Structures are given as structure tokens and as C-alpha cells.
Length: 337
Image 1 (cartoon, helix red, strand yellow):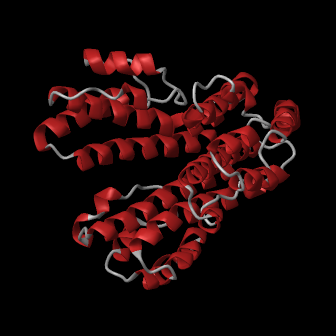
Image 2: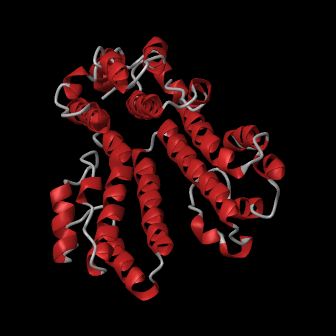
């Protein structure tokens, strides 16, 4: 079936849903609000209105943000021809839930309360299924290789008591699955998006490893295969001052953006700014998608835009609630499209 026939209706629906995205004036009105209640009143004039009405308190705004995202994912799952394009975007939430459950399993064994309240409904796997699998230690029916990696992660903790090793094991599987699903879709722009996500995560890890002083000789296992930047170059970053990073990875779009970080100097500021820079990098990779009238790319591009909107709303509401400097907050907001 030709793309126009297969995706024409889908893209038309996405265009209509795109009209629900918040614009710059909405962000500005939220930021200018004198307190959280006023900010929530502004948000209540947008697509988030239905979810805000269900809140017991305005301080539960995270529930409204998650409900809007869940609505979007559920709607797209109904009419997108290739469900994998929605599924791949939800995989990080599945692995978030797995990390929560593994940590809860550890906490329970140490006499603490489990934190099921940290689970999200945004993943592909129903949370009840995940809880049942972990509680019963029966992982056989779990997808995404979790039937293998989950018991392995639990065993890793019991052997070494090192939560970083457990998270590394789960992260490796997450990015392996994203890479595999992107490859299976066989769509060049989707492959570019998956590689960009891997590069972004690897650079994020490099900055974090540098901050805590991890030696380059033991850093390779913290990086994931499949990006544009090789593991060898990523490891080499740890032996270079931040100002020299563009020399090593400046041949990639992600590497060029790293140049924005060196001017900040202080690593704590770098970590905060890095998150925005890397999100904007992925947005840039996807920005061409909206120009393909009947392209599958539009699905990923729209879902990523919605994710960036959710981040922006959360940043704004937390900042208003805490009275954070408005100019600083503006610098944290992500590009949506």
C-alpha cells in the first residue's frame, strides 16, 4: 500500500491533535502566574483541563501531565497502522517501571516499604503484569528480553549490592530494544532518531561519569552501541577537559551541540543545561518529519513534541510553585518542534 493511502488519514489526525499542543503564549502565561493556583488556572484553559478537574489538589499536577500523555499514546495506538512506532516511544517507561520494581524488591528485603506509587501507566506492559511477575519471580511472559535481564538484574544485586551495575544492565537492554525496533521498522528517519537517542544518552553518561570521577579505563561498559559516536571516542572524552570535547566528537550534530556546554564551566550547571541541549538535539533530528505529508515520521515527531511539552509544563509548574527566577526557567524550556 502506498504511503499516501496508508498514512494519509493518520497524518491528518496527527495534524488535528497537533493543534492541542501548547504555544509560546501559554508557556509565558503560566510562567507569569503569581502562584501555582493561578498557573493551574491557565493550564486549565488548554487540553489539560479534563485531567485538572480530577485532581484533589493543584500540587498533584504530575497526575494531570501523565493523564494527558496517556490519552495521547492510547489514541495513537488506535489508529496508527504500524503500532511499533508508538510502542518504541513507550519502552523507556517500561524500563522505568522495571527499575522501580527492582528497587522495591531490594527495599522490601531490607525491611523498607515498596514504592509502587512511582510506577507509571505510560509503558506498554500493564503495571499489574509487571508487579505480578516480580512478586512471583515468574518472568517467562515478559517481552523486550525482560524474561532474561530482570532475573539477571536481581541476581546482580544479591551478588554485588551495587545498584549502578543493576541500572546499567537494564539500560543496556532498553537501548538494545530501541535499536532493534528502530532497525525492524526499516525507516531511515526512525533509525536516525534511535541513533540520536543513543548518542544523547551516551553523552549524558559521559558528563555524569566525569562529574563523579570515573576513570576512563573502566567507563566503556556505561556506554551503549548504536549511536553515531563510537564507544572509543566516548571513553576518550573522560580524559579531556570539557572544552576539548568538540575536537573529539564535533563531526556529529550531537558533538557540535556539546560546544554549548563548555562555556558554562561548573559541572552542576553543565548537567542541568545538558538535559535541554540533548533534548533539543533530538528535536532537531526529528524536525524534518513534519514536512513529509504522508510519512511515518510524523508519528514519532508528534509524540516527541508531546513529551517535550510535558517536560516544559512540569518545569514551569515546579518553578512557579517554588518561586524560581523566571529568566533561569526560560533557559530550561525545550524546543517542541
